Image (tube, helix red, strand yellow):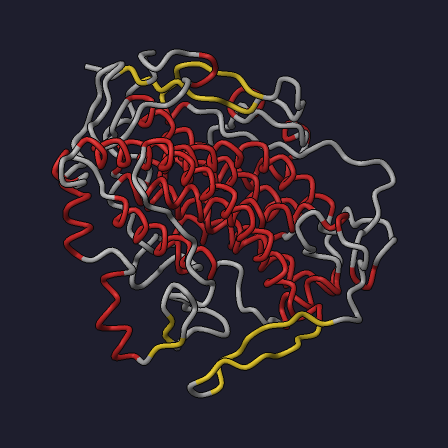
Length: 472
């Protein structure tokens, strides 16, 4: 078997070169990863030179390097944030005790489940987005798509490092399984529902990176609190890269919104579609879809798993330091539950409401972005406002799964929901129309009609920079 040159192929700060056990595991896994990347990664662009950011250290002042590189040659690395001297567990039943550097035996299965679930999302999103390069609205956007893809690949490496290093044979088997599942596959689907949804147009991609990757941010923030220090350090560094993914989504939607508002004002009938754009009501439908799908990723509103994770010090609340009570054995969280044909209040013990507490922070962060989009609409003139739907709307997990609500959170009959659904979620004709706009623009400095150009380029480069250099 050919030995991998680890220092050349895998930038890292975990001493791979001196860890023979990890080397042996990676010698088997790395070729399978590359096979997966070529089969399920971005289609058609593997031989092109992409202006990519590569993680080269965990130093916040100079952690990344930019250069044109072919994606198969990208240096997927393994980085953990610097350890915090004297760090102790910050919540739960082990509050104040030293963090674990090895997997505590009594929590082994729970920790493995957490890591596998997080790890499964990373290749899933690459699979969902694999065909989008064909219809990119500009080279700037094409480059951003591929940056997101390679970094999701690196995040997979980060989770696989933990599985290989701390979970022995079980970890190696789980690492292989991460490459065997496929997004949307009826026999071997990805673990979480949103990661089996098709992403066939760029408005879906921007909504995904806005809402679903933002869920990823809050999941990583919760895991960064973990008493298992290698997991905490890994996710703290992943957050550095995740910020760009959310930037792509938030600014992408804003550019679509800005252009749609401009075209609405230009058309004598206020019809953005007549001007080759996406109308604002359709954007609202896409928002409703991806926000509701992403809400499900936090899990049920009442969760014994979340309570157990918190008690064990494995997964906390995002930014745990902002809370006064880090044990959460007293107090309750007010919720609304479905009782027949009505909604009733219910107080839930705080630990059992941990998913909902993190979801609160997520909704607040999403609202900040929507407020920004509405300012862009107001600047252009149309009297239209985007809104986040109720967290009861279109849910498939938790208290509201199986019931029917409108975007304001009013309980509906199934007949009412079926009759009105296409007014709230993208219809087949909405998807078909947006899909018809997805014509590639692969010339430097050019951009599709339906989206506004960015305010600035990547890494201080101009918009007309050669972000992607196509090979003949």
